[in-house]
Image (cartoon, rainbow, N blue to C red):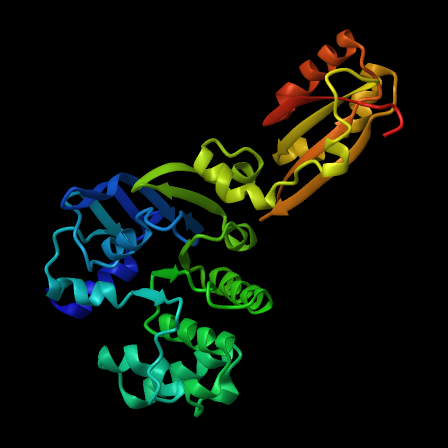
Length: 357
């Protein structure tokens, strides 16, 4: 098939999802890299794919961009099934999948402008078309004044901005970010994530972020997929997964973002005491309810937030609260638990603390 026709088909497809993996499996000898992966990413969505080393993230990337073929299942990009395409048919599609790398992968002997122009040159675009597109992209990523600089003259954050501009050059339908912020300091990471969020918002670009850092997912993603041992073990809205992780793997990954009871308060917890201490996990609209007031109505005593609070991810509130009820009465405690259970995603009586805590 003519490469230009292939590109047009990919661009004009109006399927609601940009990416679809259907029952994808891939093994290397006895080692299972991917097992029955089902994943759908909607057009314009940012999805964070998180997992520890060896989870299968690298293999999944190679399957998505056609560098590796699954032994079972189907791979759909931009509405087109690419599973059985040969190398020639894959080329125009692969050019519509932008890649951002951890270590930038810039050509040191070429200027910033030449690095960004490279995919356009490979695609056969004319000099003037390339020049115009490159300057538009450098302006977008805030590096218009660095067009003639070389990579060695740039900071790590600037190099990654060049990498993003290069990935955007061929107007991709999908942007793959492979540990793109792992080599950057926290401040620079924040600026790069902000740029990716703006690219997603302004261009409507679908983004799949592969990372082992849950903080990166929390800052930018609409949805998170947890990969472990080549399997999807959990997925959902980021706020929901942070509020109530369902697997031990996910709990380990998000542990640093969930508040725990400080040591001085934990030392006061006893099997019996003046007032019950609850751990309450909330997500969504329920997180905004007047929870302390509701508890006080039931117990007749003021409830106090001892630790924790609410956060926000993509407009969705979530949080963990450690609440002293003001009473140890068993009947009232049972009433409080009954009232809070429908609005919580996690609820536990941790013990009892003194009245003056």
